[in-house]
Image 1 (tube, helix red, strand yellow):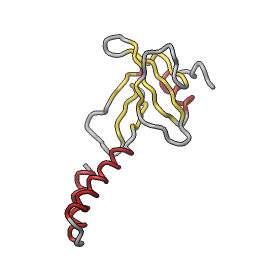
Image 2 (image 1 turned 120 degrees about the horizontal axis):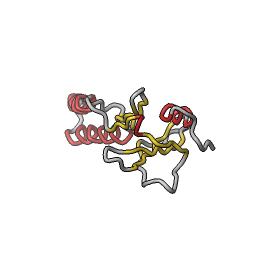
Image 3 (image 1 turned 90 degrees about the vertical axis):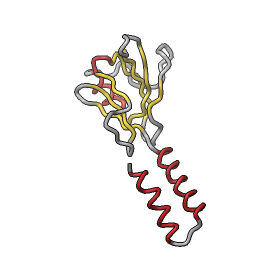
Length: 135
């Protein structure tokens, strides 16, 4: 929503200051691309599950939800014996990769990876016990 308002407002501001139409529109498009490129997943762990959305792009529904009852295991890094994991979000300084194994709606084992600041606390929040393989 912010992007839908900010980009045209900035373009009209540039046009009002005498910039060429192409330059103003080009910068508005560049601004939109940068905002989407730096958007990262926000991970929320609650009493009922783990959910994902993209910061700055708030929507009524999240981009994914995994109930805590479906989480089977949480490990550091990328376990080789698990199903291929989807990466949620990107690397930020001070964060480490954690993999989560869970059952989907069809009782199939699935996995995802996420970058977190406190892997042990994250694993404990999901499992209700410490992770089994600390580094």
